[in-house]
Image 1: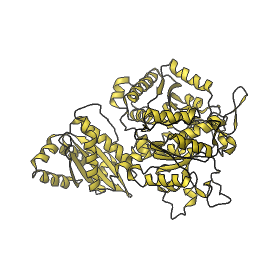
Image 2: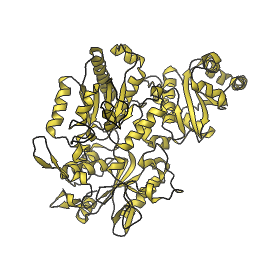
Image 3: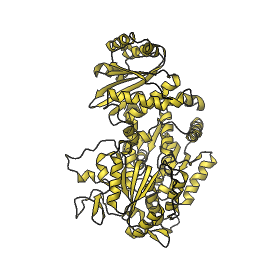
Image 4: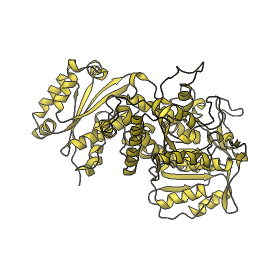
Length: 592
């Protein structure tokens, strides 16, 4: 059944604006009834240095609540003063189906969308409060889409297209997502364990969350971190935390993902007094060490350190830490470490953790009832047959016949890279699939901060076809052409549609459609896929690794397999492939 349109009014954000709205409502009894006597959602907004700042709220008494925001005696927050100083505007939103639960959900989703938008600098009340089942929750998505479309008619600069919002890396890592039932169960276990450790004043405890790419580890971690930073009322009640503040930090050893978390913290105003709470592992470890060039030494250990992509933490001896394992180091500096882990995303010999070490972490976590495994694939919109085909390709080296019953997931094989490029650009030209990019195995040379000797830029070259490689837009475009948007990941930068990315730029991020160039390090021989490290330019995937017992192990096949796996599981809606090896290309064409 089609839902009715919402009622939305835009007025100046002051007492005069409220008078204008009251005058309008006197002419419409139905709208007056909904806004005066039922729950509503409202948005204060103003421009600040070419970007917006917003406050989103919901109330059972819109006029009384807004009057409070205008009251000089209550203007203790900077955002309230900005209403007067910045020529602010006010939206009020009503709907016949609004009840308290739905308005909380609308408020939450508006905060989620606006905090994910490149046009918004800050959301001032990012409390987040997603609701469970209620009547009529089945109409929520339709109602919200209508609300967003009408808001876009008012201001398309503030309210960007939904597809643009949902493609942003901040949206995907946001703590404001509704979790699945399995994620909610995992969250409850983790919060209970953290509460138990803090109450007992335990130290050096490990919560180990294992899950393959796309199983929702990042969103789960982000949601728990957000609740603890805000010390939600239900968290306090459930775990009876005795402290009014929980000292948390996020650690991630991926520069692109680091920027995403920093933007989330900034936009949602999660850090008190501007304190840094997002770190790479070296920086946070150095906080506890006496080093001449390190930040001010920290005396107190953290309550909780969250580690996203814990598989990327270094394990080789390194000057930046005294232990040979950064996860062990982080355990020294927290009461609880919550580590998100996927062995199949280890891409460098420096990050390698053998099965014995991983088993020790898992056994330690299990002994404390703090081991969690996520198994549901939440990224790729494909059925199990397609997922199993991709897993067999990556894990077992098999190129099997792919069933025609693929659902909506699109897999194609191309004869040459120019055709692959054309197909990906065609997808990227559609607003709904604009986040489509080409990526490749690391089989072409690239040295960061070093100019390519024989060309203008480092490139992926296949016969007469070539494209800038691995973030080269920073060098390839002239200063006037560079339109780098601060806070956006590689795939979100518009220039990168003319580039080829790698695991260094795309790991941890989603694409609508991914075009994977499988380079010469991957070949089809004797009926199966083989890996040839001599063709790879990723030195960190080729070195032998010295283990603790002094023995050496060749990791190249495992790491090159992981590299391919990361690339082939980026696409939400589709996977397009070009293989440099002719035999592999022909086998794929037969089977796909």
